[in-house]
Length: 227
Image (cartoon, rainbow, N blue to C red):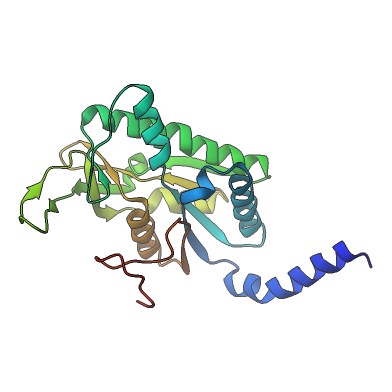
């Protein structure tokens, strides 16, 4: 037996208990950070998602795209303003957000999955009324003043009908974190929060967050050791 064959057999033997444990289970993955900008990591991510599907899991991808939004805004000469780590999003910026997240980033992920032999469908939270949103009320901790962030929202409700249809059709859903409010406006929502809300609504077995941070942080940016 060659060394390469031995290594493959060793990896499969080690992975088998996990494959058996999570077969048929729904896994929600939030895709962000360096994995979205490094070409090798992008390819590895897509390959891993296809592998998960191939061994019987039901992966659902929720992605961010902050750096890509920032670059596009720079190209059109629009400066980004951040408050509490959130991008102030006026109507013009929201148009860019929808174009980048729902178009450029979403379709690139779908294409990468297809290149590795998977079958996926990209959508935003506006499709099939997946994400009902509401305007986020951001309160300044020092002044207690409510700051208007524009089209920055939070999840109000999740309707999993469209995800259920895609999973039944054996597709991998790839979701951009854009929702629509009762006021008819589109809202950009933090991808981590969207992934968590979708995982909760689907009673997913696992929620995986791919990020550049060291883990979950509290309000003072201290690493949480448990939940």
